[in-house]
Amino acid sequence: MLLPSCVLYSNHTVSETILMKCFSSILSVVLSVFLLVSCGTDLYLDQPVPAKINMGHGSKVCVTSSFSRYSPELVSQVEKRLINSGFYTVANSPAWADSVLHLDLDVYRDRTYDSDDHRDNKKDKKHHSSSSDRYNVHLTCRAVWRDGSVLGVKTYSDYFYGKENFPASSLAREITDDLIPHMGSYSVNIDTSSEKPLLEQAANACKAGNWSQGESIALQYVSQTNDPEGYFLLGVIARKSGNESKADNYFRQAASLAPGTSKYARELERGNELRNRRQMMDAQTGE
Image 1 (cartoon, rainbow, N blue to C red):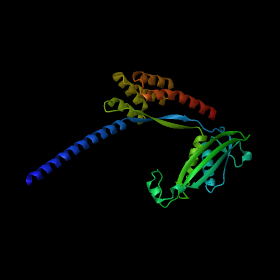
Image 2 (image 1 turned 45 degrees about the horizontal axis):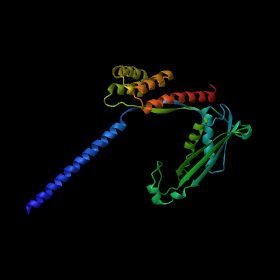
Image 3 (image 1 turned 45 degrees about the vertical axis):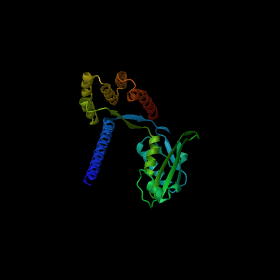
Image 4 (image 1 turned 135 degrees about the vertical axis):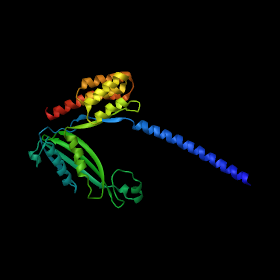
């Protein structure tokens, strides 16, 4: 009677061993993918963001709105941000304004969000309790010049929980970001894998704000390896310093060494895009 028991025990042990090997293999693959995805250093560069609705630098703007319990708070936030920008002045009456910015605000309760089950299963980013009603926001901004010509129209959507949590500040920021030229940023990723310690050192120096040091190390790196990623980093550094022609040359060099690499081609295209944005922003600001 002992033999079957031993055989069963042996089979169980073999099964466990197989399962452990499978688990180890899967874990190894997952870790490899994670390292591949997470590998790299992100660097951030400035980019001009022209106004999407341009009402004229220094012009007087009157902010009006449709009737809503939330309108006064939103109008106040928008006016405050316009004044603080120094790009526009704010008029109290359309009669004294060069242009009118009308905020057509519609806030309504989300009836599809009434059940507790729906709330529990809903995966959104905003904190709420199961006892809070959800409200949706639809906002249309229309900018009209004093002669009645429409300067632009933009729509915005948002939502909030509980009647007292209307997102006036975040909506005002979205609106004024579209009305006021400003500087934004975008990120590029430098492939600094474990096989490229010198390139990683260069990228980390840039990330810490030591762009000149990063450039020196990157030049040393490409002289030793001729790696396209090194030229890509040099292009990023040149763009950071405002030397677009030098940046384009480095990006072309990277693209010629690794044809078909999308991020090299993308940065070459972005050069023209940034130049167009800069010209548009200069025209809007009068510089």
